[in-house]
Length: 155
Image (tube, rainbow, N blue to C red; front, side, top):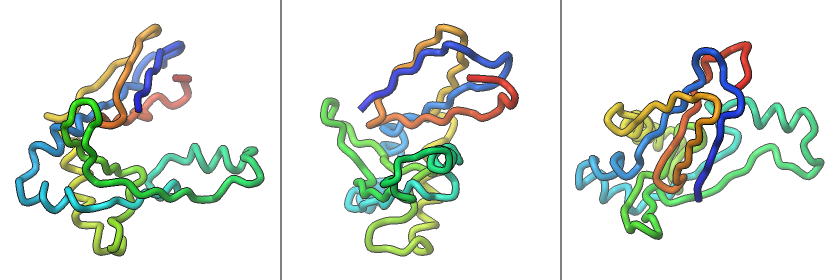
């Protein structure tokens, strides 16, 4: 539902986090696009090539013996927030691989459009961490992307 992070250690430069408002990403689409997306289900995979290697590292370095190599889940492309009643786009470049009932090749053009659309500058903000900073966000309507630009330092 939500995530809260506090900065205990930050690099001297870099390590910011980008946040994107999925309410606005959905609401600014054309009426025709919203009608199309309202009926679609996304297929998400933990094995998508664009995800970070962190999960693969954990699997290699001591995952449970019964851990799967890939986890797949289906979610509506558009979710209605249970408290606000607002609709939000619910796909992401790190895990969404296709639409249910379609191949990856058929899904690719629309997914490319959505991934670019949802990260437009007018939907995003950049959070610059300092020691002691606290960030809290609602995963049902916000996406986050930690910027990996602090090589050689801890974050």
